[in-house]
Length: 222
Ligand SMILES: [Fe+2]
Image (cartoon, rainbow, N blue to C red; front, side, top):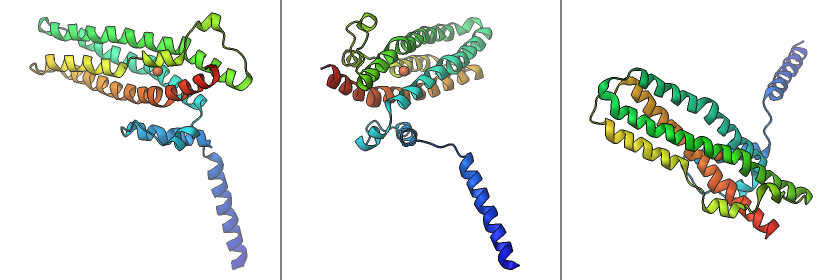
């Protein structure tokens, strides 16, 4: 009797364990390594073990970057825009400096959108073509991409989070002497978080994705 009870219990716990395992998302080595890499970037590291980098597939990296672009365009920028709108709606005569400084951010936003669009419309498709070439030997469509090379792009790539830092610093300089309204403090915190997000994104693009692809491009196209 006791033995039978034990058997039922153990098969039950086995079943529960199996169910739990089945419900867990299954991560590939690449996704796991990418998560490790992301944690390291968030901790502020900019150099990574080669062994770890090799485990991350370029496709996963591209998907992560694309997803982040979507979050910036569809969530982050509209949230910041909403804050700017709140600031404008509370405008008083003495808020002119504040409004001028928000103007800095609006032009920055345009720059960021243009940068993301360039990557989505041109850079990422080029990378896909390069990967396709590596896989199947299908030539890169030069009528679409001209003489573009990643090497040249990499050398002229500007850092968006640094520009944002400058905007934030300028705003900070002007407002410290004033009594800052709550909506403005929210705005500044949003900018700060966004800057951190962009810094992580930039490390993934500039320290992980591009160096690896520049090497691949050199290897494939000479
Ligand atoms: Fe990007």
